[in-house]
Length: 112
Length: 113
Image (cartoon, rainbow over all chains, first blue to last red; front, side, top):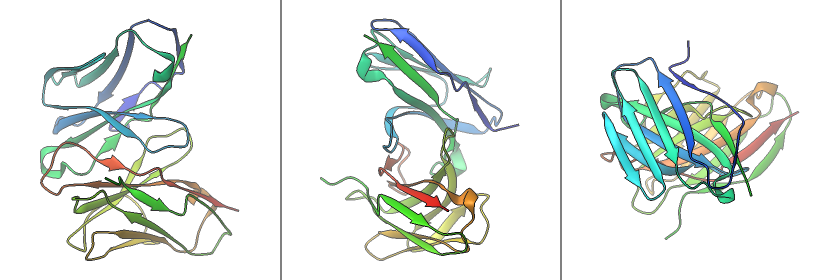
């Protein structure tokens, strides 16, 4: 079993839709949770970073962490064609906060 | 302020050859991590360098080695290349005591033929 599982998609939505992206994990020691966006032929770009459980909002993006269920989510409101990319979740534990475990990525396509 | 710079951007090598990839971290960052990203997969941790020492290592064979220089730049070396080593190699820099995530470079696309 992989440490981090992520639905690869692809996910296709119309412009303006609310998008929900999710990851599950098996290691209860994970404390730091991140979402990265990766455009084709580019490196991942950090979108959101969350410590432990709870919600965090940044503009159109909301990250949620439910440690009891080992489940994290990223919500994108009012999705735009420019949001079309692959979204990667990543996480690490307290003792190794600079070593990240990534999901396989969900490819999102927002249609105009 | 320059971000993470990687070179070369693309590389084609033959099985059995050796390759060296280079990375300059973001200004102010002292830790460099290397990841391998196969097509359609998430990045996999290779190793991390801090203070010119390998601090952590993922599940990669000894054919993968690295180095960090006093100016924090880093190299990734892969010996005896296999077809399965074809991937995007990502360098990420961070602060050793920071927990806000990495800054990634755009990667080096390595193709082994």
